[in-house]
Length: 302
Image 1 (cartoon, rainbow, N blue to C red):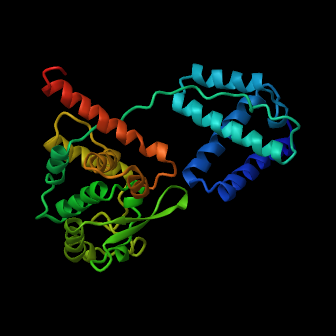
Image 2: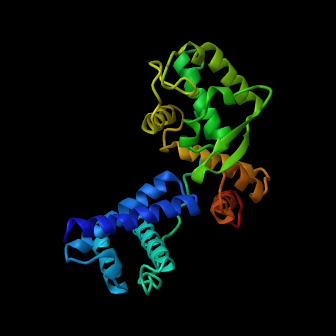
Image 3: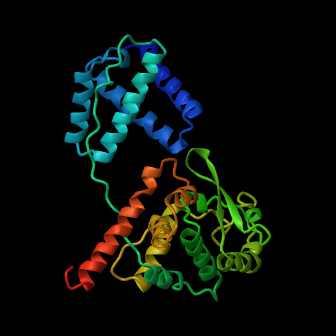
């Protein structure tokens, strides 16, 4: 296969990625994943000297079966199908192909796994685990408090800037998935912790590269997602010994506890930054499941 043909195939993929970035406002990580999926598909096609423009539904299904046989998870297969269907829809709409070979491809069904449930008592123990009398402990306590009290994604938390924290403005303007913005309130307890952290710890860190970022290491470098995960695991092992807790579990707890205490679903959707209400509805299932377990445990007819 000539270099010019290979280049043309990659041009189709790049053009599609530019299209979904501009028209569908997808997050960069999603676009990168789609590009990787299409490049792997192209690599598989080239083994038999096929091109992106001359495949049919049988070939696409064969590729999906190949991925499944080689250990790809159902979620990976689902994303690959979504990507391939979207790609060929783009190609068809732009009259680069006469028929869309992916139009009848179906997604495998995947059971939605409920997140690990953390009770309000367990969250309280976790939030009290860091020693706030130390500079590291105060920083860690602020991170835990914001993850829970604001329901932030870890990527959102690690991008907060110091100038976003002000007692006069007790909310954060968060840029979430797909660069969608939302306002998230900060409670007085979290705000007091953050002001204390900035005054006693963050203001003393000198960093030319990351001067605006709120949460940094003592050396002035950025905190990684993995470091945050390990930090939470450390405090969870001290306070909640029988559960593995991730940053996202605190976001789940934020939503579940709001619903348990009477918050309406639309408000929770807005606070979480979910594009679809159906994504938020998983937390009503958690609340119902907890009620059922409570009934079975304590009611004589449970």
